[in-house]
Every structure is written in C-alpha cells, then in structure tokens.
Image 1 (cartoon, rainbow, N blue to C red):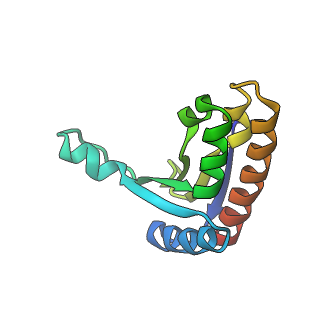
Image 2 (tube, rainbow, N blue to C red):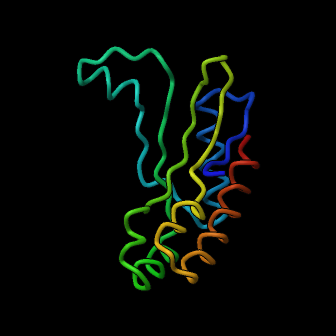
Image 3 (tube, helix red, strand yellow):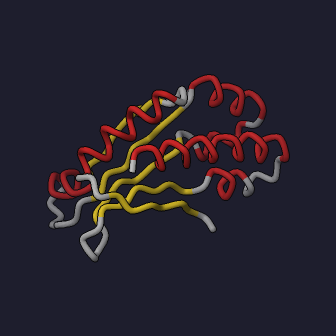
Length: 128
C-alpha cells in the first residue's frame, strides 16, 4: 500500500490543529500548508473541494537522510493531506515514506523511512 488514510469527525481546521500538536510532540513540524482550493481559485480554476497539503519535517532526521543519500531529497519534506472526500467525510492521510524511499533502493534509508512512517501514522491517529 502506498498510503495511509484515516477518517476523522473533526473539521479540517480542527484536524489540522490537532495534527500540528501531535506532530510537535513527536519532534516534527509543519513547514508549509497549501489550501488547494484557494490556490486553484487564485489561478482562475474553479475547484469546490476541500483539500489541504501539509509539508512536515523533523530537521534532524532530514539532515541525516540528506547526508546519507542526496536522492532522498526528492521525497522531502513528507506530505500529509487533510481533505473532504467525495462522500463528505473528512480524511487525514500520507504517502507512506517506506513506499517512496523504496524507490531509492537503499537499506539504511528504508530503515529510517520505517521509523518516520511509524511516527507519522501515530501522529495522524492521535489527531483523528
């Protein structure tokens, strides 16, 4: 499976706030947040969905990964999405770091990705 997604009864803003706190408790931070609908509207494209992309990072781990293998930079920072699906249910999810890092074919990166994935899934579960 290339992703991990859970449903939440929280609003998107509540889920993002809870996620920010859960990430901080795990030494991750939100570097940037993209509101896809607002950005598309800004570019003249009509989109009525609710879809947010959060770029998240643990700076110490990012440094370790980049110093080990530059190719890992293609997958940094990690992205977590918070959105309303077509059925009206709010979702929180991420692309599994293990799926991305497996493309590099580096055992050390795979081990680090496993730890990161576990931590990010814990943060998502805590935020739901």
